[in-house]
Length: 152
Image (cartoon, rainbow, N blue to C red):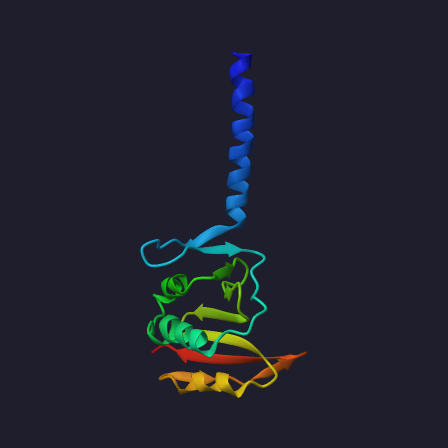
């Protein structure tokens, strides 16, 4: 009987460790048929690279514009886009490679894109239907552009 307990003990420790780690980085969405699972983590933050305009446009279109008025499909759209993690604290979705985030709250979906200087190309995203630009804010060498879609 002692032999069995010793054999089970390492397994129990590994199982407890897996459960503990899983609680920190739990999937927010795991729609395997339509995209990659999005992890929820307390350490989520945007990546350092400037997103290509086409990628930012696609994310805004599919996650915010196409899912209004309730934005129910926003998480699935971000899952299909790939590369997003969700902050367990704020609920904001951050792209791991690009300086881009998406926040969905009742009645509104917003995206923030960080660019070097005042990149006027990002303002082209405001030309999408139902999109409103926010006021750009500059911190250091980056300008952050907020773009909003309001549900009906």
